[in-house]
Length: 328
Image (cartoon, rainbow, N blue to C red; front, top):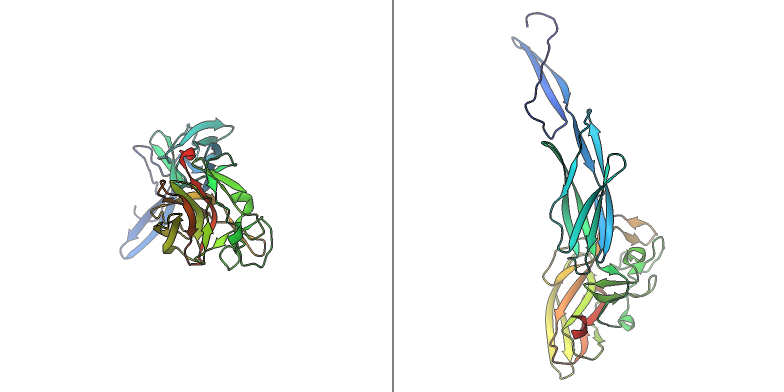
C-alpha cells in the first residue's frame, strides 16, 4: 500500500484447531525500513483443569472434579477420556453443575499399587485439549487381612511417624528431621489382602537397620513382606537373610528406593503414597512421599526362626508380615 493509510487483515481458517489464541506478526517494509505489529487471533475453544494428584486406596473409590473453561465464545459440549489406568482400576465420568465433570475412580482389593501418570483428554469436534495428573493407588485402609504380623517393637530405634502439626527434636525418619505423616499413613493397612500394622506415632516406631536379627513367629510360610524405604537416596545391594530352624537360610539382595524417588526396583512396589511428609518444626513438605513393599519368597517346607536386616541406617523398616497358605 503506497503512503500512509489503513490496511485490512483478513484471516480465515479451514478447520477447527486445538489452539485458541494465535499471535500473528504483520510486517511492513519500505526500502531499508521495516516495522512489525502483532495481532492476537482468538478462536473458540476450551481449557481443562484437574487436581495434580489423586490418591486412591484398594477396595475403595476416589473422586476428581474436572473444570472445563470456555474460551472466546465456545459453547459446544466436551467429551472426556482417560489414558490407560493401572490393572484393577476403573473410572466413570459423570456430569456436574456448570462446566464441570466428575471422574470417579474405583480400585479392587488387588489393584496394582504405585504411581501412574494419567492423561485426561477433552474433545469437541476436532478441538482437543489435555491435562495430566498422577494417580497414586495405595494399600487399603483397615485391618481385615490375612498374614502373621511380625512384632518389631523390641527393635524400634527410629521416630519415623508423627501426627501432623507435631514439633519434635528426635531426627525423624531420616535423621535430619523429616517423618511420615501419621494422619496419611493411618495405623494399619491391607496390601493385596495382607495386613500390616505400624508402630505408635510420636514414639519409637521404626527400625533403622543395623544388621539386627529379629525373631519371627515360628511356622512354615511361603513369603516375608516388609514395608520400608530408603532415605538419603536410594540404598542398593542390601542383604537380608531369613534363618530356618534346621540351620539353613535364604539370602536376598534388595535395592530400596528413596522415599521421594521411586525407582521401581525388582521386588519393590508401592504400598502407600502420601501427599506430604512432616518436618521437625511442625510444618509440612507438600510433595509425594512413598512407603514401599518388598516381598521375599521362602521355603515353605521349613520352619522360619529369624530374619537379619541390612546393616545400613538409611534403610528403614516400618512393618513386616509373614504369609502362609491361609493368605492365598
